[in-house]
Length: 302
Ligand code: RIB
Ligand code: CA
Image 1 (cartoon, rainbow, N blue to C red):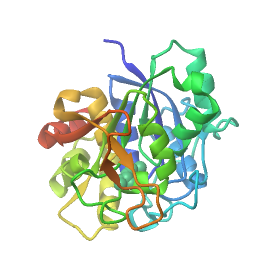
Image 2: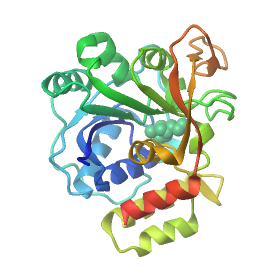
Image 3: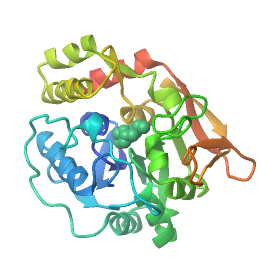
Image 4: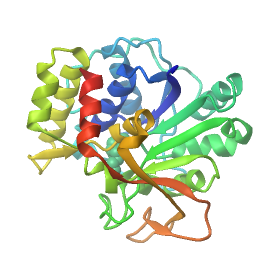
């Protein structure tokens, strides 16, 4: 099978970084571009980090396009506490080999989608969905040529990580998330209900490091940094890698069809999901073979 062409839309971020290294190492995926969004620690640092990760993995010819520096409405939420002030926990990585392209992410995505066969590119979204929403609004014809969108975000039955029921990626930009989830495109959401089950512990970190491979060593450094900023010293949830793992091996996940609306109000549940008959059905991953997922991640990275 030829590898699936993907664009990674991301706010790297430690777990984003592991997801990006996995995608670059996977024979099932071909990364056509990386687009960045402010998310965890601001657009300048997420864009620089995308370039640093591509340089570290020896893929410095993959274009990086910087996207939205702010959500569609209001301001973002900073996650420096988790990801450190450089956004990658101070892990020693080279600098970017080349600057990002001059074209903003939404227009870059539209041009790429119009220049390639319809349905041939999937968008794997690891941060707030501002860039994807802008693509839908600015270039609906191009957006209609997206193969599928797989996005990490939300909490269905699981408690939130920003508010009691709201998760970071959706709560950062609920208006953008609503545009995407209600677009009618082939959307698969990977919520905290699943991603909190895929956890790296210290033994897993040691396995990656002892593999003697570059992606394994860098991923071990990233997980060690992910531990450094955490209360839980037992294990760390690998949220964003779940998006790539689902793209490569969907059988690892239990995916259900659901109609979920996003709370775009300004209360404590801003960004939270709730069942609704008013919105199109999307696919939602609600369970995972966590052991199998971790095995695929380690096998591919090492
Ligand atoms: O809620 C988890 C999400 O928020 C992940 O994408 C993580 O990188 C942070 O952006
Ligand atoms: Ca992320």
